[in-house]
Image 1 (cartoon, helix red, strand yellow):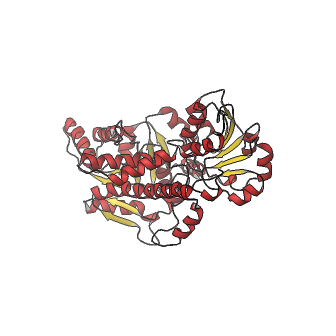
Image 2 (tube, helix red, strand yellow):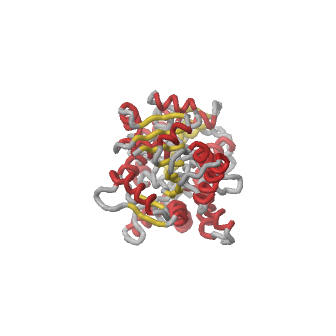
Image 3 (cartoon, helix red, strand yellow):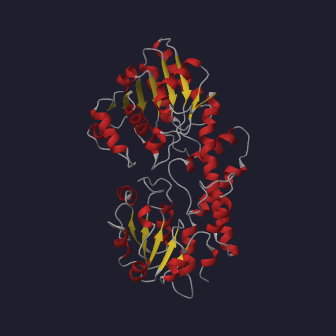
Length: 449
């Protein structure tokens, strides 16, 4: 099938590449000419495991091309995906300007009946707005061309997006036209062979499903962080609590890891956007507001642990201290730092007068772009280099290479021999047996008075 995809971010680039990989003819459109030129040369603008070789292979096979020519892409596409960003507006609601701009462009250039697919994460009712924008553009041309707008939300995890796309656990299709559903089933047939993964529903239900899924996952994270904070107060160990509740199949093991707060491009903005949608329809989303508030507070919790250790007697706390920071991305296997917990931590350390030596396997260039050159920030080439001249270590992102460090080497390298573990990677007894003071999230039994 001939597919056009507007947007070459995480969703558009991964979706387009995976559709091309199963044989569809895909054209990806972006208004950023430099980005388009780079993609056509094999320069991938994001880090996502497994994506680069797939892009290059499908581009070489002429199944995947990149262009800034919207009209040509629209002429090409039997199915046209909208996969552009929906950043939070000033009030936290989703900003639809890019989605609607693409819709108007489609209406301006379409020549034959077309199915338009909303792949971007959008509030309930957006399909109606897209439909109206396309119809308005067609009317301005004096044309009457049949089209349909379908909701097909993505469920891709950054760091595992290619696998999620190639082996989806469900394919949600929101449509009222049986012909549009049949077209989407044809498109996704290569991903749907073992058993039927397509979940058909109406458009508005599909739009809400995406937000509900992310809000549920964010709720589990905030709930565990709330329990972790209680564990610290009462002297319990949240890791033992996690083992105790995760074995209940009604709860499960996924997303019950306490930590330094969630970030990224989805959970923060989607929880906010769903809450604003509820408010716009006269409902106060008390649980969603609490999820957001808990997460916002949790991003400051690592610094609270640091203060607990250093604010003793009459010293000046962290002033003049140097902290090694392992991990800058919001999660492992990505270079994405949007809403990352590291950003709050570094700001707090600098405000307190501390210096930072940071290492992340993939996010260093993104961090350079965000923070610029600073005297109180040094980017290091590996994890142990970050320890040189540092007083303490803070672990922010759970990259696999951070899971089993040499604790004796940590003790010898760190002037104050203390680790603040924002992801509970280490066993308190093992690390303290090596002579290193340890602070985790919700590990009350190992807190130092």
